[in-house]
Amino acid sequence: MKILVVDDEALLVKGIRFNLQNDGYTVVTGSNGVEAVQLAQDPEVSLIVLDVMMPEMDGLTACSKIREFSNVPIILLTAKSDDMDKLMGFDNGADDYLTKPFNILELKARIRALLRRSGSGKPCETKTLTIGSISLDLDARNAYRAGVLVELTAKEFDVIEFLMRNANRVYSREALLDSIWAYEYRSDIRTLDVHIRRLREKLEEDPANPKYIMTKWGVGYYFKKN
Image 1 (cartoon, rainbow, N blue to C red):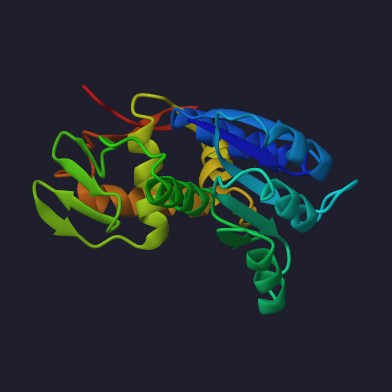
Image 2 (cartoon, one colour):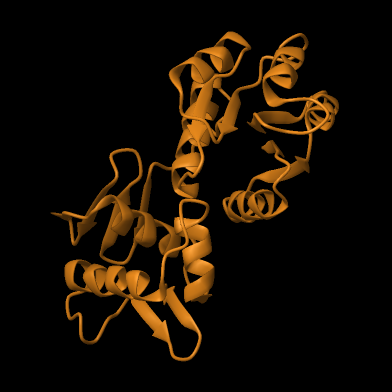
């Protein structure tokens, strides 16, 4: 499936594109409302992520113009959280609304939900992710170890989901912070280390000798898939 991402913040677009491509989507990008309207005419576009505050043409106007020829789901991104701004977005044809700063995994979850509702999602799309004795229910956001429910915080679930989706791939601490905390805020390395330690305590049989949540010394962390 092809997703169109339009925002004038180049680093944000780069981060979204990276994460969506990791999930197997084809991603095309633009930087203003005029480009959004032009690129949205591609019949292969299944969903649009559209910033509100952009040069040349704002996202609300672009959304309205896109609705003249397309019914693909549209998620609006904005730095404003006022309810009136949200209502204006829906009035102009938006399907969902996400306020900056946001969690990249929340954006991906909303994309999956909209694609399922629109019939664009893969019929066989898995709703669970299992590697070894660790299993995630992606819809309910529950984690299990050997079939037993394990209580995770929202951010702990985000971390383990990201690592499991990208099993055997080593990520530096900085890359993990960018991918998981993303635009939400710039956290520090210690925050990530604490989350990794807690995940090992909850999901590993022997936290001192982890089998899944591994450290690549001098590089970062990864989820080991045999």
